[in-house]
Amino acid sequence: MRGGTSKGVYFLAEELPHDPLERDDILLRIMGSPDVRQIDGIGGAHPLTSKVAIVSANESGVDYLFLQVVVDEARVSTQQNCGNILAGVGPFAVERELVPSRDGHTTVPIRMMNTGGVATATVQIEDGAVVYDGRTRIDGVPGTAAPVIIDFDDTAGSSCGALLPTGNATDLVEGIPVTLIDNGMPVIVVAASELGISGGESPEELEASTELRRVLERLRRAAGPVMRLGDVSETTVPKITIVSKPVSGGAVRTRTFIPHRCHTSIGVLGAASVAVAVALPGTVTDDIARSAGLPRMAIEHPTGSLEVEVELDEAQVVRTAVVRTARKLFDGRVFARPSL
Image (cartoon, rainbow, N blue to C red; front, side, top):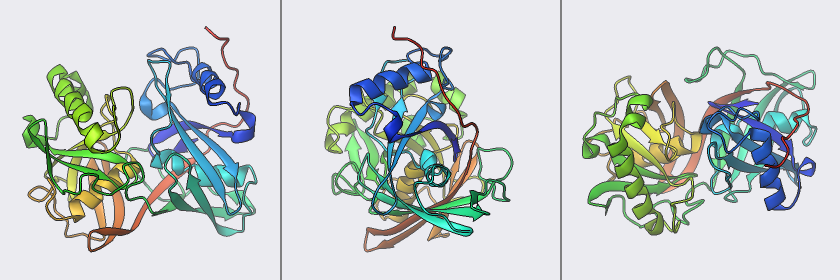
């Protein structure tokens, strides 16, 4: 399924091995990792298209475990959520009859097993089936589709234990002012000017800068322990979002490393964390962002913008919500390659 601006493979939990090592092994073989082209599997040769959702029913809705299958390494990570792949979980749950549905719309409570957070997806239903066609457009996806509205509960501190893991709106890491924040995704927010760039460069330009990538990785590894994430040298979090002044009427312009490739848009939960950084006083976005649009703000990214609704009460996150779309691409059987 396409979920938001990502693409992934959705499995019922019962159809995969319960042992994590066996599960990860078969997922690597299904996706074709480790190989930069993933030529012998169904992965799309990019972190945004090498994702997996494992879904099962629970007492009130469904459980959702997200797995990032690393493209060029024999590694599978469960250390983060993915809000884009989350957009497909509600439709998948209806497709597999894990939840009751009713015409008009169905709300699907989703427990995000990576962090323990809860989201509620509202899915359009007609004649008992998921509606995928619609008029909602999201930047980074061609055409339009039916909306999937996602409300997040208790996302603040989901991985780091606190919205601001250090208790500060701004910290100095490796001599660079940053905001360390976790509103569903651990993110290091840093001003483009601190890195000697404009912030308007394309993802390809940024990835081509060996020096920039070296600085960002050094920053990420230094921030990991103070964000309560420990040694992050072999993990996919925290992400790094570079911010600069908006140019298309949004709140802030972003370029996000996830963590070694530059995102062609921005992750849903990454955008939720950046939006709260914009809303909070004293962060590195203070002299950059335009936040007059609260509680709804557009987070600009390389292919458009992502709208996030944020409500705060004395620096506490009350509500975070986004509008995404999803589409079923294929339903069938995949054949894993033999073990290497």
